[in-house]
Length: 132
Image 1 (spheres, rainbow, N blue to C red):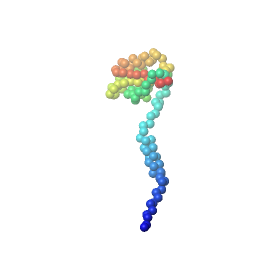
Image 2: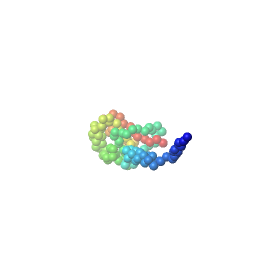
Image 3: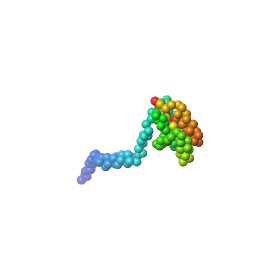
Image 4: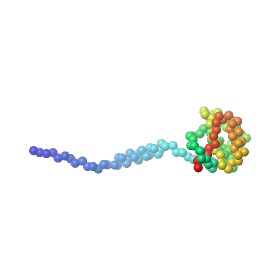
């Protein structure tokens, strides 16, 4: 009687294709992810204990510590601000404004900007802070 011997299978696993797939997935996610860049206008936001993270905004108004006024990334003169903001808000579906104000800005300037925002017909606005 003749017995057949079973073939011994090697327990080794070739991981080269696995490494290739991992690198391809890594490359895919790196190329398709959205790179988030910091705004070009540098300001020091005031601290807040109750600050909440908000989603991306429609209109961003920035006031630097020197009193420079920006609508998005574009510098704006305070005298023309109401008309410029009104034109910008008419292009948006949901007119929501976010104010990014340096903590060194005078309260009088902030109040005049808030008045301009209200005069431009803005439905709602918020003042951005950063958490402690």
